Length: 452
Ligand SMILES: [Zn+2]
Image (cartoon, rainbow, N blue to C red):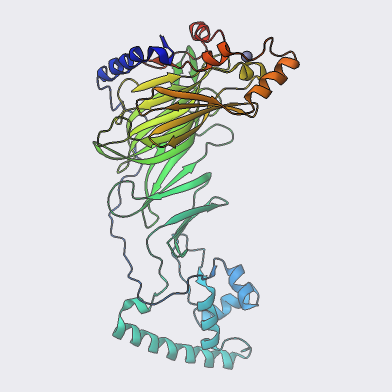
């Protein structure tokens, strides 16, 4: 074990050794295969020719349509039967009528349906509407099909989740499609993750509350058709324990690899420490490679660490299998993953964390120029570790309140000493390992006996 930046040369040697050891155990076959693969990409692209108001109100149900028309739902539907409303059904679910408020206003003006209570007047209105429709169709045939559907949404730009319904919007906030995805959570990713020129939508689906089903990542194409589903995690035994196959997604990210496009996903076991980092083939949803970590990973950065053409993955979190508070870590992975980490850096656990009983997660990861700053936080104080791109420690700076926190804990009798130079020097030591050690091992605790 190499400790401390005064032995940096040996640390570098460790990394070099680790890098040489990339013996290519890549592509571990996973349980999670794509359930449905690739639909043909026959989706229509729509050219917008008409200027469209930047803000249009979309009514998404009979109830809201009726409210807009200031009638009850039955009346609105009766009107629709006689003189069809300008409905759109971008959704696959035909039970959701969608109509723009301004189109509805125009419809009500032109159809003259309001106030027509007598059947005769309704029929007259129907005839008038029919005549208007004939004219519209004639204009459309003359001028191009877009006139019929000038409000059609463009390419997916962003997606929102509301009550289990994923709604995908274009750059002007017009709805491209919506569908119910039970358990959908977080912020969907709208990005061309497979390089086909159109944007896919990645939706994280939470594990069931009972833990009976694992979380998953679902990929939909630009038209809302399901491309694939990747189920996080799998049952496995580790550190002498059995872990169920129930995992929840933490991050997903599109990443380019030397072998093509992929989706990187990080998932945690729903109860215990294992974390899975999965490299998913973004065309098929198949597991291309995976990395397992003995503890949660809170931060993810995709950045170029070695100066080659492709980015590496930098993860930050905690190494704490078994009993104990563990240690904060930085983990660098080559993409595609190799059998070992590119670098595995363990940070000391400040004694304030130990006595406060707080897990010393690395829960900040930020670029600072060419450097990377990782922060360990306990009791409102932060220890900021600055690394260069080779993940060598450049400096450690405690936040301004560290001294006060330490003093308070000392006065409360939780710590038996004042903060001194020796302790500060100890906190500046970071340890490198060729692969993840047990973050609660006695040998690790011995490395930082003077500050933990
Ligand atoms: Zn101390």
